[in-house]
Amino acid sequence: MINETVGIIGGTGWLGGSIAKAVLAKGLLSAANLVISNRSGNHPLAQQGACLVADNQDLVDRSDVVIIAVRPEHFASLNINATGKIVISLMAGIGAQTIAAQTSAAAVVRAMPNAAVEIGQSFTPWYCFAEVAATTKSLVQRLFECVGTAAEVQQEDFIDYLSALSGTGPAFPALLMTTLANQAMAAGIPCDIAQLAAKNVVVSSSQLLASHDAQHMIDALVAYRGVTAAALQAMIDGHFEEQVGRALQAGAAVARQGLQT
Ligand SMILES: NC(=O)c1ccc[n+]([C@@H]2O[C@H](COP(=O)([O-])OP(=O)(O)OC[C@H]3O[C@@H](n4cnc5c(N)ncnc54)[C@H](OP(=O)(O)O)[C@@H]3O)[C@@H](O)[C@H]2O)c1
Image 1 (cartoon, rainbow, N blue to C red):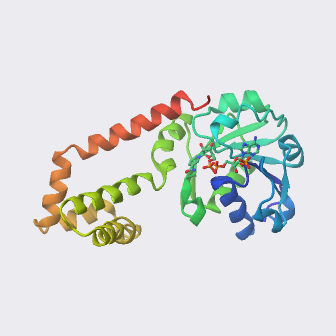
Image 2 (cartoon, rainbow, N blue to C red):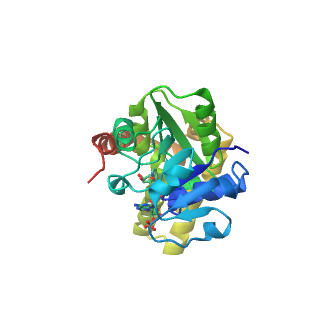
Image 3 (cartoon, helix red, strand yellow):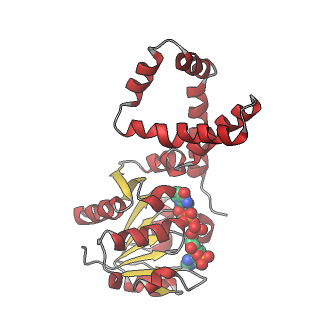
Protein backbone atom coordinates (compact mmCIF):
# COMPACT_ATOMS: atom_id res chain seq x y z
CA MET A 1 0.00 0.00 0.00
CA ILE A 2 1.23 3.51 -0.80
CA ASN A 3 0.78 6.54 1.44
CA GLU A 4 0.16 9.12 -1.28
CA THR A 5 -3.32 10.43 -1.96
CA VAL A 6 -4.38 9.86 -5.56
CA GLY A 7 -7.03 11.98 -7.24
CA ILE A 8 -8.69 10.88 -10.48
CA ILE A 9 -10.37 13.64 -12.48
CA GLY A 10 -13.02 11.76 -14.42
CA GLY A 11 -12.68 8.94 -11.88
CA THR A 12 -16.09 7.48 -12.70
CA GLY A 13 -15.46 7.02 -16.44
CA TRP A 14 -14.44 3.86 -18.33
CA LEU A 15 -10.71 4.22 -17.68
CA GLY A 16 -10.78 6.36 -14.53
CA GLY A 17 -13.45 4.24 -12.84
CA SER A 18 -11.71 0.96 -13.72
CA ILE A 19 -8.40 2.24 -12.36
CA ALA A 20 -10.10 3.52 -9.21
CA LYS A 21 -11.73 0.13 -8.58
CA ALA A 22 -8.50 -1.74 -9.32
CA VAL A 23 -6.23 0.26 -7.00
CA LEU A 24 -8.68 -0.37 -4.16
CA ALA A 25 -9.19 -4.06 -5.02
CA LYS A 26 -5.43 -4.68 -5.29
CA GLY A 27 -4.82 -2.84 -2.02
CA LEU A 28 -2.45 -0.27 -3.57
CA LEU A 29 -4.49 2.52 -1.97
CA SER A 30 -6.88 2.75 0.93
CA ALA A 31 -10.25 4.28 0.07
CA ALA A 32 -9.37 7.17 2.40
CA ASN A 33 -6.51 8.05 0.03
CA LEU A 34 -8.58 8.06 -3.14
CA VAL A 35 -10.40 11.14 -4.44
CA ILE A 36 -12.45 11.03 -7.63
CA SER A 37 -14.35 13.70 -9.51
CA ASN A 38 -16.99 13.97 -12.18
CA ARG A 39 -19.69 16.43 -13.16
CA SER A 40 -22.71 14.20 -12.68
CA GLY A 41 -22.09 13.14 -9.05
CA ASN A 42 -23.33 9.99 -7.31
CA HIS A 43 -21.36 6.85 -8.18
CA PRO A 44 -21.02 3.38 -6.58
CA LEU A 45 -17.31 4.03 -5.93
CA ALA A 46 -18.33 6.64 -3.33
CA GLN A 47 -20.09 3.85 -1.41
CA GLN A 48 -16.72 2.03 -1.26
CA GLY A 49 -15.31 4.97 0.70
CA ALA A 50 -13.62 6.94 -2.09
CA CYS A 51 -14.19 10.66 -1.79
CA LEU A 52 -16.29 11.92 -4.72
CA VAL A 53 -16.03 15.65 -5.40
CA ALA A 54 -17.38 17.98 -8.07
CA ASP A 55 -14.67 20.63 -7.76
CA ASN A 56 -11.50 19.57 -9.61
CA GLN A 57 -9.31 22.11 -7.82
CA ASP A 58 -10.53 20.66 -4.51
CA LEU A 59 -9.45 17.21 -5.80
CA VAL A 60 -6.03 18.56 -6.81
CA ASP A 61 -5.53 20.27 -3.45
CA ARG A 62 -6.27 17.01 -1.58
CA SER A 63 -4.02 14.86 -3.82
CA ASP A 64 -0.30 14.15 -4.21
CA VAL A 65 -0.85 12.47 -7.57
CA VAL A 66 -3.54 13.62 -10.00
CA ILE A 67 -4.69 11.34 -12.82
CA ILE A 68 -6.49 13.16 -15.64
CA ALA A 69 -9.00 10.69 -17.11
CA VAL A 70 -11.39 13.03 -18.90
CA ARG A 71 -11.85 13.04 -22.66
CA PRO A 72 -9.33 15.27 -24.47
CA GLU A 73 -11.98 17.81 -25.47
CA HIS A 74 -12.76 18.43 -21.79
CA PHE A 75 -9.17 19.15 -20.75
CA ALA A 76 -9.10 22.83 -21.69
CA SER A 77 -12.01 23.61 -19.38
CA LEU A 78 -10.57 21.84 -16.30
CA ASN A 79 -8.67 24.95 -15.23
CA ILE A 80 -6.63 23.36 -12.43
CA ASN A 81 -3.48 24.52 -10.70
CA ALA A 82 -1.42 21.45 -9.81
CA THR A 83 1.73 23.24 -8.64
CA GLY A 84 3.91 20.79 -6.72
CA LYS A 85 1.83 17.76 -7.78
CA ILE A 86 2.48 14.82 -10.07
CA VAL A 87 0.02 14.80 -12.97
CA ILE A 88 -0.56 11.59 -14.93
CA SER A 89 -2.56 12.12 -18.10
CA LEU A 90 -4.42 9.31 -19.83
CA MET A 91 -5.64 11.63 -22.58
CA ALA A 92 -4.82 10.71 -26.16
CA GLY A 93 -3.49 13.50 -28.34
CA ILE A 94 -2.58 16.08 -25.72
CA GLY A 95 1.16 16.61 -25.37
CA ALA A 96 3.05 16.72 -22.09
CA GLN A 97 4.23 20.28 -22.75
CA THR A 98 0.61 21.47 -23.04
CA ILE A 99 -0.38 19.59 -19.88
CA ALA A 100 2.59 21.06 -17.96
CA ALA A 101 1.77 24.58 -19.17
CA GLN A 102 -1.94 24.33 -18.33
CA THR A 103 -1.61 22.64 -14.92
CA SER A 104 1.73 23.99 -13.60
CA ALA A 105 2.41 20.43 -12.35
CA ALA A 106 5.81 19.60 -10.86
CA ALA A 107 5.95 16.44 -12.97
CA VAL A 108 3.91 15.26 -15.95
CA VAL A 109 3.55 11.65 -17.01
CA ARG A 110 1.63 10.56 -20.11
CA ALA A 111 0.21 7.06 -19.91
CA MET A 112 -1.79 5.18 -22.52
CA PRO A 113 -3.85 2.30 -21.12
CA ASN A 114 -6.67 0.67 -23.05
CA ALA A 115 -10.23 -0.44 -22.44
CA ALA A 116 -9.04 -3.75 -20.99
CA VAL A 117 -8.34 -1.90 -17.74
CA GLU A 118 -11.91 -3.05 -17.07
CA ILE A 119 -10.70 -6.67 -16.78
CA GLY A 120 -7.18 -5.95 -15.49
CA GLN A 121 -5.63 -6.82 -18.88
CA SER A 122 -4.43 -3.47 -20.24
CA PHE A 123 -0.91 -2.79 -21.45
CA THR A 124 0.03 0.73 -20.35
CA PRO A 125 3.13 2.40 -21.81
CA TRP A 126 4.02 5.59 -19.93
CA TYR A 127 6.39 8.48 -20.53
CA CYS A 128 7.87 10.98 -18.08
CA PHE A 129 8.16 14.57 -19.26
CA ALA A 130 11.50 15.98 -18.01
CA GLU A 131 13.18 14.71 -14.85
CA VAL A 132 11.00 12.59 -12.59
CA ALA A 133 12.16 11.00 -9.32
CA ALA A 134 12.71 7.24 -9.24
CA THR A 135 10.11 6.97 -6.46
CA THR A 136 7.54 8.63 -8.75
CA LYS A 137 8.39 6.24 -11.58
CA SER A 138 7.96 3.29 -9.26
CA LEU A 139 4.57 4.62 -8.14
CA VAL A 140 3.41 5.08 -11.75
CA GLN A 141 4.47 1.54 -12.64
CA ARG A 142 2.68 0.09 -9.59
CA LEU A 143 -0.46 2.07 -10.36
CA PHE A 144 -0.76 0.70 -13.88
CA GLU A 145 0.23 -2.82 -12.84
CA CYS A 146 -3.07 -2.78 -10.93
CA VAL A 147 -4.82 -2.91 -14.34
CA GLY A 148 -2.43 -5.17 -16.28
CA THR A 149 1.14 -4.76 -17.48
CA ALA A 150 3.01 -1.47 -17.89
CA ALA A 151 6.35 -0.18 -19.14
CA GLU A 152 8.14 3.15 -19.31
CA VAL A 153 9.01 4.44 -22.80
CA GLN A 154 11.76 6.97 -23.46
CA GLN A 155 10.15 9.12 -26.18
CA GLU A 156 6.83 10.92 -26.04
CA ASP A 157 6.20 10.08 -29.70
CA PHE A 158 6.07 6.40 -28.73
CA ILE A 159 2.96 7.23 -26.68
CA ASP A 160 1.30 8.76 -29.75
CA TYR A 161 2.22 5.76 -31.90
CA LEU A 162 1.15 3.27 -29.22
CA SER A 163 -2.17 5.15 -28.82
CA ALA A 164 -3.00 3.67 -32.21
CA LEU A 165 -1.65 0.22 -31.31
CA SER A 166 -2.23 -0.95 -27.74
CA GLY A 167 -4.32 2.14 -26.88
CA THR A 168 -7.00 0.84 -29.23
CA GLY A 169 -7.27 -2.31 -27.07
CA PRO A 170 -10.03 -4.53 -28.43
CA ALA A 171 -10.63 -2.48 -31.59
CA PHE A 172 -8.48 -4.45 -34.06
CA PRO A 173 -9.69 -7.85 -32.77
CA ALA A 174 -13.29 -6.56 -32.87
CA LEU A 175 -12.85 -5.55 -36.52
CA LEU A 176 -11.31 -8.93 -37.34
CA MET A 177 -14.12 -10.75 -35.54
CA THR A 178 -16.91 -8.88 -37.32
CA THR A 179 -15.12 -9.27 -40.67
CA LEU A 180 -14.70 -13.03 -40.21
CA ALA A 181 -18.35 -13.41 -39.21
CA ASN A 182 -19.60 -11.21 -42.07
CA GLN A 183 -17.54 -13.10 -44.63
CA ALA A 184 -18.74 -16.47 -43.31
CA MET A 185 -22.36 -15.30 -43.52
CA ALA A 186 -21.77 -14.01 -47.03
CA ALA A 187 -20.50 -17.52 -47.88
CA GLY A 188 -23.77 -19.00 -46.61
CA ILE A 189 -22.81 -20.08 -43.09
CA PRO A 190 -25.76 -19.49 -40.69
CA CYS A 191 -25.41 -16.31 -38.63
CA ASP A 192 -25.16 -17.99 -35.19
CA ILE A 193 -22.53 -20.48 -36.39
CA ALA A 194 -20.56 -17.75 -38.17
CA GLN A 195 -20.48 -15.67 -35.00
CA LEU A 196 -19.49 -18.61 -32.79
CA ALA A 197 -16.68 -19.53 -35.18
CA ALA A 198 -15.37 -15.95 -35.45
CA LYS A 199 -15.54 -15.44 -31.68
CA ASN A 200 -13.65 -18.67 -31.11
CA VAL A 201 -10.84 -17.54 -33.41
CA VAL A 202 -10.45 -14.07 -31.90
CA VAL A 203 -11.29 -14.61 -28.23
CA SER A 204 -10.67 -18.30 -27.45
CA SER A 205 -8.13 -19.86 -29.82
CA SER A 206 -5.95 -16.77 -29.51
CA GLN A 207 -5.46 -17.59 -25.81
CA LEU A 208 -2.80 -20.04 -27.00
CA LEU A 209 -0.66 -17.03 -27.86
CA ALA A 210 -0.35 -16.23 -24.16
CA SER A 211 2.06 -19.14 -23.89
CA HIS A 212 3.26 -19.67 -27.49
CA ASP A 213 5.40 -17.42 -29.63
CA ALA A 214 3.23 -15.96 -32.42
CA GLN A 215 5.75 -16.55 -35.25
CA HIS A 216 6.31 -20.14 -34.12
CA MET A 217 2.54 -20.64 -34.11
CA ILE A 218 2.27 -19.32 -37.68
CA ASP A 219 5.21 -21.47 -38.82
CA ALA A 220 3.79 -24.59 -37.16
CA LEU A 221 0.33 -24.16 -38.75
CA VAL A 222 1.65 -23.17 -42.18
CA ALA A 223 3.95 -26.23 -42.14
CA TYR A 224 0.88 -28.42 -42.81
CA ARG A 225 0.85 -26.81 -46.28
CA GLY A 226 -2.92 -27.02 -46.32
CA VAL A 227 -5.89 -24.84 -45.44
CA THR A 228 -4.19 -22.44 -43.02
CA ALA A 229 -1.21 -21.94 -45.31
CA ALA A 230 -3.50 -21.04 -48.22
CA ALA A 231 -5.59 -18.65 -46.11
CA LEU A 232 -2.61 -16.83 -44.61
CA GLN A 233 -0.82 -16.65 -47.96
CA ALA A 234 -3.88 -14.92 -49.45
CA MET A 235 -3.71 -12.34 -46.65
CA ILE A 236 0.02 -11.82 -47.18
CA ASP A 237 -0.49 -11.49 -50.95
CA GLY A 238 -3.20 -8.90 -50.18
CA HIS A 239 -0.60 -6.76 -48.38
CA PHE A 240 -1.98 -7.40 -44.91
CA GLU A 241 1.18 -6.15 -43.19
CA GLU A 242 1.22 -2.92 -45.20
CA GLN A 243 -2.47 -2.36 -44.43
CA VAL A 244 -1.84 -2.77 -40.70
CA GLY A 245 1.11 -0.38 -40.98
CA ARG A 246 -1.09 2.22 -42.68
CA ALA A 247 -3.78 1.79 -40.01
CA LEU A 248 -1.29 2.38 -37.22
CA GLN A 249 0.19 5.43 -38.96
CA ALA A 250 -3.29 6.88 -39.54
CA GLY A 251 -4.14 6.56 -35.84
CA ALA A 252 -0.75 7.85 -34.73
CA ALA A 253 -1.12 10.88 -37.01
CA VAL A 254 -4.33 11.84 -35.21
CA ALA A 255 -2.65 11.38 -31.83
CA ARG A 256 0.31 13.49 -32.94
CA GLN A 257 -1.74 16.35 -34.33
CA GLY A 258 -3.87 16.47 -31.18
CA LEU A 259 -7.49 15.88 -30.37
CA GLN A 260 -8.39 19.14 -28.63
CA THR A 261 -11.34 20.95 -30.11
N1 LIG B 1 -11.51 4.30 -23.51
C1 LIG B 1 -10.37 3.89 -24.08
O1 LIG B 1 -10.26 2.79 -24.63
C2 LIG B 1 -9.14 4.77 -23.98
C3 LIG B 1 -7.90 4.25 -24.38
C4 LIG B 1 -6.76 5.06 -24.24
C5 LIG B 1 -6.88 6.34 -23.75
N2 LIG B 1 -8.09 6.82 -23.40
C6 LIG B 1 -8.18 8.19 -22.88
O2 LIG B 1 -8.74 8.13 -21.59
C7 LIG B 1 -9.52 9.28 -21.34
C8 LIG B 1 -10.85 8.85 -20.74
O3 LIG B 1 -11.52 8.01 -21.65
P1 LIG B 1 -12.78 7.16 -21.17
O4 LIG B 1 -13.06 6.21 -22.25
O5 LIG B 1 -12.57 6.66 -19.79
O6 LIG B 1 -13.90 8.32 -21.17
P2 LIG B 1 -15.28 8.36 -20.37
O7 LIG B 1 -15.78 6.98 -20.06
O8 LIG B 1 -16.17 9.29 -21.12
O9 LIG B 1 -14.89 9.03 -18.98
C9 LIG B 1 -14.63 10.40 -18.85
C10 LIG B 1 -15.09 10.81 -17.48
O10 LIG B 1 -14.75 12.17 -17.28
C11 LIG B 1 -15.79 12.77 -16.53
N3 LIG B 1 -15.69 14.20 -16.79
C12 LIG B 1 -15.90 14.88 -17.93
N4 LIG B 1 -15.67 16.19 -17.76
C13 LIG B 1 -15.29 16.34 -16.46
C14 LIG B 1 -14.91 17.46 -15.68
N5 LIG B 1 -14.90 18.69 -16.18
N6 LIG B 1 -14.58 17.25 -14.40
C15 LIG B 1 -14.60 16.01 -13.86
N7 LIG B 1 -14.95 14.90 -14.56
C16 LIG B 1 -15.29 15.07 -15.85
C17 LIG B 1 -17.06 12.11 -17.04
O11 LIG B 1 -18.08 12.10 -16.05
P3 LIG B 1 -19.25 13.18 -16.05
O12 LIG B 1 -19.84 13.15 -17.42
O13 LIG B 1 -20.15 12.73 -14.95
O14 LIG B 1 -18.57 14.46 -15.75
C18 LIG B 1 -16.59 10.67 -17.26
O15 LIG B 1 -16.81 9.88 -16.12
C19 LIG B 1 -9.65 10.02 -22.68
O16 LIG B 1 -8.89 11.19 -22.63
C20 LIG B 1 -9.10 9.07 -23.70
O17 LIG B 1 -8.33 9.74 -24.70
C21 LIG B 1 -9.22 6.06 -23.49
